[in-house]
Amino acid sequence: MGRAFEYRRASKEARWDKMSKLFPKLAKAITMAAREGGTDPEMNPRLRTAILNAKAQNMPKDNIKAAIERASGKDTADYAELTYEGKGPHGVLVMVEAATDNNTRTVANVRACFNKNGGTVVPTGSLEFMFSRKAVFEFEPPENISRDDLELELIEAGLESLEEYDDIWYVYGDFSTFGALSRALEDKGIEVRKASLKRIPLNPVNLSEDQMADVEKLVDRLEDDDDIQAVYTNIA
Image (cartoon, rainbow, N blue to C red; front, side, top):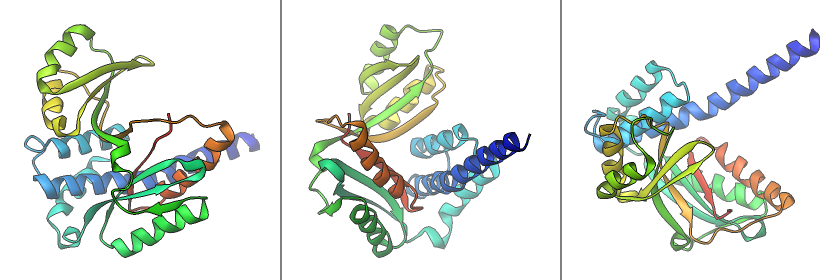
């Protein structure tokens, strides 16, 4: 009984810890999207997607509403979206996306993460050409349309590829087609589980388990920072 209780408590605390780090990042994504494109989700595909992703993580409606309202506040006026680049352990390339109101603080934290975990920050623009920015949508296979038919109908919206992994379909397009693909999927009645703008490595590399463990330490450390919204590597 005692061990079972301790396990349940530890499991619950782990979930709380994850939410305490995840919810602020989701809220910031919503606020930034609303600030840049307006507070109406119907007219702002980026905001619509940020809300969708937040709901997928069970973020409370009140938190979502507060994040949207925060977009018009003075405290978000100085927020900027920045990208930092670096090389991690074993030569792994790392792209770090942040939303911050204090670049000096954030870049210092990013440098510390790299320095303490076998990596180094490199000048902005050094690694950009090694990644391709893509709009990515994840959803369960729809019942009312075949994969081939969906591919044909999404081409005009900017579809580059439709792939399947573990019974989940993934739609890929250039980052500039994010809004068009989002609307096209909605028009087809497809319920998207998650949508995002990702950086896909052009020349992915394979690592051993031990090497992966070294890189994961760096990525985990970066993701723990409240200013960091996403971390991408060139690992296959």
